[in-house]
Image (cartoon, one colour):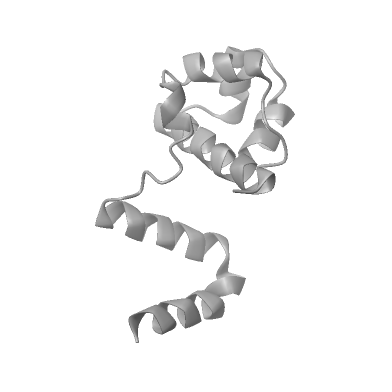
Length: 107
């Protein structure tokens, strides 16, 4: 996995955990004692937290370290469908490409 890919996947997991807790980025930033823009950069895959910040994130999100790095947790069909729908809604410009991939896989 490329460094960029890991940062993006990690950021998505942080966002998932934050939203599951009902936290805004501001609330999480306050709990971790960092600026909101740093949370935003982490969630958007632009940066990776320091070890100290990572430890604070784990505590604030009440998670296990391994859970934040479980990038392939969407194994149940409903979870997979939810993630696909999320991607379709987030990247409508990629709809035709996604359609082509699905059609190629199901032929």
